[in-house]
Length: 246
Length: 214
Image 1 (cartoon, each protein chain N blue to C red):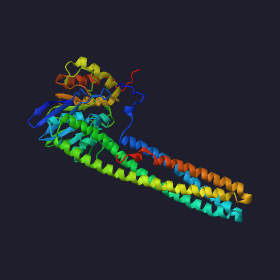
Image 2 (cartoon, rainbow over the protein chains, first blue to last red):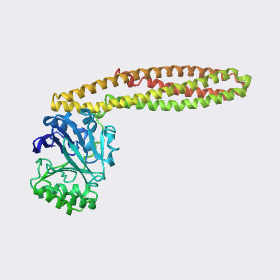
Image 3 (cartoon, helix red, strand yellow):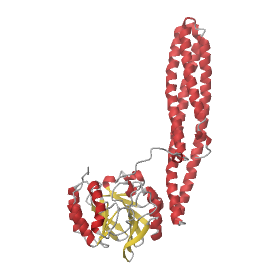
């Protein structure tokens, strides 16, 4: 089973990270899921692949009533992001799934009906959660051609999908980045190969540099916090991406 | 990210079971039926040729003419029977596919329950899925019975076709100058009917029918 850790809390407003499954088969990439809850309603960010559903659900159920999940946010269309969709809908068939318009007819292959999906336009949109307004932030081509991150300006937290991801070696289980220079080595290859456009990367860096961010939460690896957020943005800005190393 | 290479050798444990095995069986039945359908189409053309040949032979092949007309009716009936079988197979494939999907989801939900214990909402979802699975199982059992009956009646039809073909062979011998060509046509007919009979015989024995439920 995965473990949960509350990474932000202010009254009824909370971010919970669902991370690190020791029983995960080695053939599956490790993923982080994030639950944002506000006034008893929850939104799950990148709920994960169908094979890890039991681990995510059971960890989440320890923290939160799964039937109070009102929405899912899929940063993009990959199977490790959203292939568990049909199982989540079993618990609340009225649940909405926010996803780039680009994928709104592809992701239904994982489940759901036309009522399930809310298409996010390229420029992003505001997403309500029981009075809290979250912002879908464009991150196209990083790495998917229709890609969004989710910003919570009250928690000053940015869910950054695959941006900031790191493929950590076994035994590196810390939830937060503890030593940026040591950590970033595990990010470099991932970003060079998975991120396809230097122009898109530059625009993203410019956009998020304007935001107040205390925590940058990727879908794989560890969370950047405090000064490591800016360090990461600067590092990413300098990195040449879209390169296949021979 | 490098992925581990798949193991090319397939162990017994990796063989599909339950709905997966049923799906494989039904796919094989479908392939067999497809081949029978194409042969049944050939029979229709052969029956037409036999009718023309009998007409040319005139009084020398009156009996053969009657039988070739019967063989044409038989080929029509066989095609209709195969079309009904094909429809049943398609419905069965759909039901088995749903069960296969259910099986995967149920495995994941079972694993969820074993990790988080008695979660009331999870229990409700699992109960609802169980009821759905029972309905699908009942539907599949009914289809299984229908399919078995349809194959059985197709088999009996083909047995009749075999008798007709053998009678045509006997009648061909009385065809005087046309005896050789009538014998060839009726022999081919008999061979093809026998081919279909063997196919249907193997379908009757399919393990798909040995399961009372999916």
